[in-house]
Length: 50
Image 1 (cartoon, helix red, strand yellow):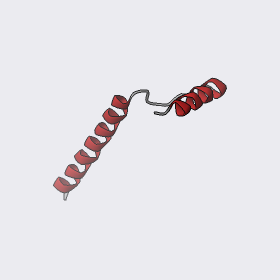
Image 2 (cartoon, rainbow, N blue to C red):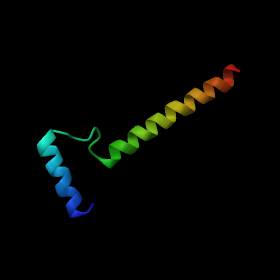
Image 3 (cartoon, rainbow, N blue to C red):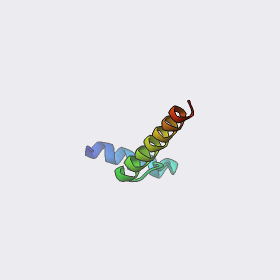
């Protein structure tokens, strides 16, 4: 991330109290993986049901 973007993000957080919901990229990928698994299980259940 460019320095100007980091500074802007820091100032935004300081001014508004805003913070990202997921702090690290690993948390984001973990959530995506969980959602994909949930979707796959639902599709398999639908195929079995009919």
